[in-house]
Amino acid sequence: MEVNVSLVPLIAVLAYIPLLLATIHSKPWNSRKTLFLLFLLSAFFWSLSNFVFRADFIDNHSNTAFKVVISLYVTMAILFHHFCSTYYPSGTRKWLPFAYISLVLLIAFVFLGEVTNITATDGIMHGSYTLQVIPLAIVLSILAARNYYIFINLLRDNKKPENHNQYLMLIIGLSGLLAVSYTHLTLPTKRIV
Picture 1 (cartoon, helix red, strand yellow):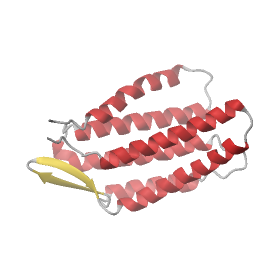
Picture 2 (cartoon, rainbow, N blue to C red):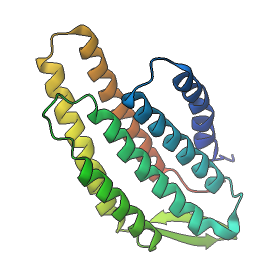
Picture 3 (spheres, rainbow, N blue to C red):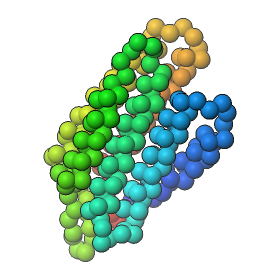
C-alpha cells in the first residue's frame, strides 16, 4: 500500500484558507488580530512549503526546500508565542526579545546546514534532522512551557468565563501545535511504499 505523506500538509494548507479569509474580513481590527493573521500566514506558508517539499516538486533543491520548511516552522512557532503573549496580564514579561533573537539565530543555524540532512535512497531524496536540532527544540520548548505556565495559572486564578474560555482555547491551540510538531518530526519526508 502506498502512502503519500504530502497529503497531511496539503490538508493543512486547505484548512488555513477559510481561517485566513475569516480573520481578514472580521472586525474590529487590532494588534492582536494582526498578530493572529501573521501567525496564520506563517502557518499557511509552512504547510505549503512542507507540501511542496514532501510532494517531490523540487527535487533539485530538496536541501534548500527542507531548510525553508524548518525556518517557516520556527517563524510560525515564534509568532504563535507572540500572539499568545498578548493575553498575558499586564506587567508579565513576554520574553519577546528572547523569542525574536532566537528566531534569527535558529534560522541562521538552519541555513548553515547544521540542522537538516538530505540523503538519497533508490533515487528518492529523504530529509532528516541531525542532533543539532536540539537547540531549536530547547528554545521552542522553553517558550511553550512559559505559555503553559502563564495560562494554567490564569485559568486557576481567573473567575471570568469569557477569559477562562480564551485561556483554555490558547492551551488547546498550543497543545495542537505541539502535536503537529511531533507529527512533522516523525512523518517520513517522502513517499513510502
